[in-house]
Image (cartoon, rainbow, N blue to C red; front, side, top):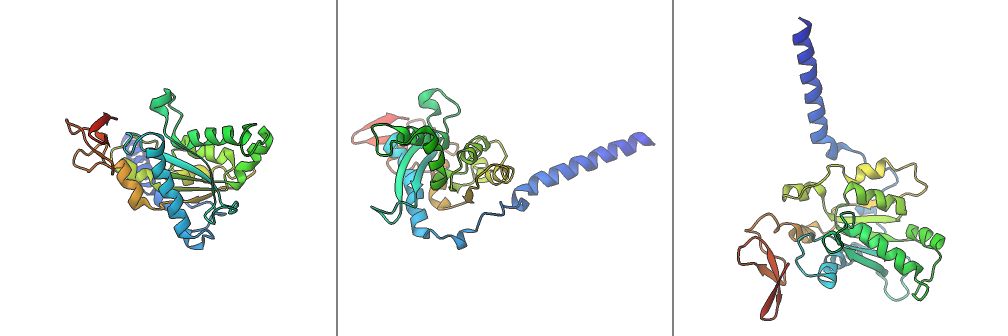
Amino acid sequence: MLYPLLILGLLLLALIHLTHGQSHRHTHPVQTSQQSLSQDTIPFETRVYWMRRANAALAELESPCPFGAFGSVVVNHTDTSSDPKGKLVCMSINQSMQKGNPTLHGEISAINNCSGILTDPNGEYKLSASEALKAFSTLSLYTNAEPCPMCASAIRWSGFAECIYGTSIESLVEKGWGQILIYSDEVFEESTKLPSMTRLIPNVLANETDPFFSWQFDPQYPCPEGCHRSGDGKGCREIWGTTNREL
C-alpha cells in the first residue's frame, strides 16, 4: 500500500515543480526598488535611440549580421553637456568567437571596454581603478537581448544604475537559441544584499531587436538589412558592393 502512495507523492511533487517552472517567469516579482517604464524619468525616445545604438554596434564593430548578434552600449545619462540624450561611454558586441573566450558576451565585453576607457591614463576620464568602480553606479547599460545569468550577475556586481534590454530570453528560446533559463529579474532579486541597486527595464524596442535573432535558425526568415542569404540558405552574408563576405 505504501509503494503506490509513494509513487503518487512523487508524481504530485513533479507536477508541482513543473507547474512552478512554467509559471515562474510570469509571477516572479520585480525588484521592489525598480519602477515600470511608465514611471521612467528618461524619455522613451531616448531609450529608443540608445537601444538602436546597441543594434548598430553590430555593424560598427563587425557586420550587420553576425551570428551572435548581441550588442551593448554603456551610457551616462547624467552627462548632457553635449547631447540631452546622454553620453556614450563605450560599446561592444559578443566577442566569444573572435577572441575564443566563451565569457565575452556583449555585456561583459562592454564592461571590459568601459574599464579600459575609464582608466586609460591618456584617455578622456583618467580615473583610478577605485574611481572607475564607483563610476559604474552613474551608468546605464543597454543591451539588445536580455542578459544571461552570467551577464546579469556581472551587471549587478558592476553596480550599474540601470540595465535596459530588448529581446527576452523567452523569445530567444522560442527562436531556437540555447539559453540558461534563469532570468535577469531573478538574478537581480537575489542580489539585494549587494551595496547598490540596478534598475531593470525590459522589452524596450523588442520589435526591432527581435529580427536580429530570428534568422539564425529559420532559413525562411529574411536577413538583417545589409545582408542576404548565402548560397546554401543556412546563413547570411554581408553585402559589400559587388562582393560578399561570409559571416
